Amino acid sequence: MTPAEDTNRRMLRARDAMDRSFAEPLDIARLAAVAHVSPAHFIRVFKATFGETPHRYLQRRRIERASALLRDTDLSVGDVCLAVGFTSFSTFTRTFGRVMGESPSAHRRRTATPAVPTCFAMAWTRPA
Image 1 (cartoon, rainbow, N blue to C red):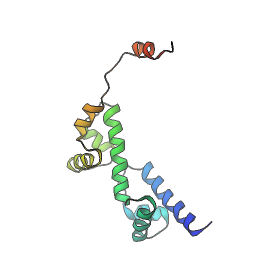
Image 2 (cartoon, rainbow, N blue to C red):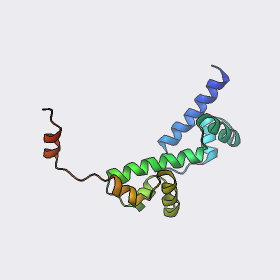
Image 3 (cartoon, one colour):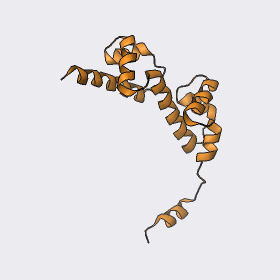
Image 4 (cartoon, rainbow, N blue to C red):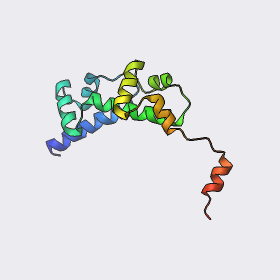
């Protein structure tokens, strides 16, 4: 295995840990330990490998999950905020707006699908 392949494998291991545990408190030291590198080296190599810092990646991942929860559940925006790992509602709404271009409430209104009875949905989607 070449050194570049080893580095990529270590960064993928850390990114997978972030994807699995996105709702938990994660810090650079813990993620660097997963990748078996120093924290400063981890930040540099992660950004070089994936094009964004570990913090930015984690925030984007949390917002993607929040978007799905807002679209697919009836959880309140505050409950979604806590479910995806944010501890501050204002940070959540500010980050959501920066990433998605709209507030969480506006996103929910825009992406909400009207409830259709299952029998109608089956009839409409049945092959002719």
